[in-house]
Image (tube, rainbow, N blue to C red; front, side, top):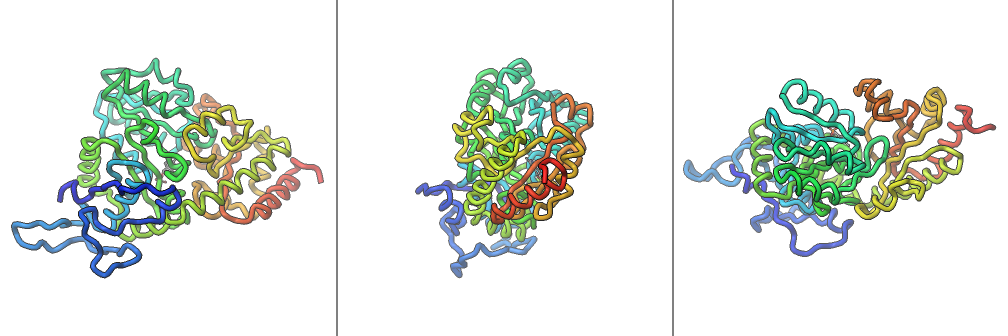
Length: 403
Ligand SMILES: *Cc1c(COP(=O)(O)O)cnc(C)c1O
């Protein structure tokens, strides 16, 4: 089994983004098509493959190393991420884990200060156990990155944009150019989970690696966990594949199939979720709440965001000025499920400091200006009128709006 069997060749003709998502090339990359012309990519629910002979291993031998269903997903993802190669692994955190194995003891990682809580936890582990220095800086300001760049030691510069939950924007092209100029050995890595490849393609903006939690928008239904790593450089791709094959974290065939199924409707879901979010953002802003959403002109980095992305996405945050008020609002909604995560067809509400970001110690949350009263909305595909009415009722019940 070689990396070649996970190979992804980029489709020659480029269609519009929504079309690309649905159009799955059913050949295996070597021009071999499914013998029965299955319209849905079949699930190869097998751990092993019989070899043609003792001398010929065949294309697949063992599912940890490669599986045709996974290959289809990886080729499809490479196409929609504009990656040279894409890899499907068990979760979004696994994706980051695999990427951080490109970093050696004594090396340094530069990461944001408004990172996904799980990413923060993994980086802290590396800092404490693997002799890796992690600089947490405000990556939404390139000037904060420059002083910590070290041509000898910096290996990864890890960005999220928009950040979660503060919805700040990192300038991928400017940062990529700066990093590549000062640190030719460093890789710019973008966690693109929040935007999905439908709205933003970091590899086209200068990043070296882009990854997604497939658990979120790619799947869209909160019924599976997955991670996708997209890589621009063939040599880096080989190292990533080596780690995945060695550690055995490749995505299982059934989950690959389910994820491919979800990806087909990503465009439709995202269009609807984004339109809903825009209406909700305007509603909340009109009620006098401080709303963070790059679809609003009031967002300080509105222009920068729209130079990189095709849309503003479907996650917004807002503050009420009062932690207890925020708690009452979250408790008072009915349509919005109190849940961590995002990207689902259902609408979700959370208080990051109590939930997804609770693993970040309180003093660090304070240092990073993460407001304790922050409410995050992850907007689904329901009718926007219902979602707004439910929020309006909750604002009344909580006492934010007078009856
Ligand atoms: C959810 C999430 C992850 C982790 O993905 P899992 O699939 O839950 O492991 C990483 N980054 C971001 C931005 C996320 O939202």
